[in-house]
Length: 67
Image (cartoon, rainbow, N blue to C red):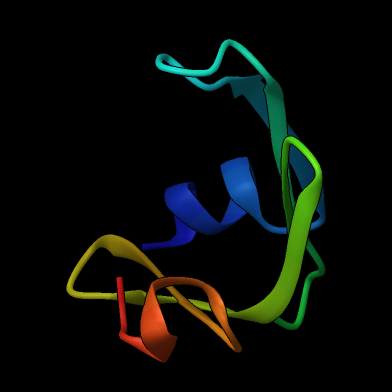
């Protein structure tokens, strides 16, 4: 869990959408607050580590389901 936290929290991860080819990024603070931008859409949410997995829950994206 700590290795995952060191890699993703307090950092910005970026890439490009495989379908639309538009850039995306997720920025996570040390306390787990997160912002996502995918093309022209954005959202905020929370990230945490659970059983050595990185989890996200967005306020609006994915109907607010845990990911």
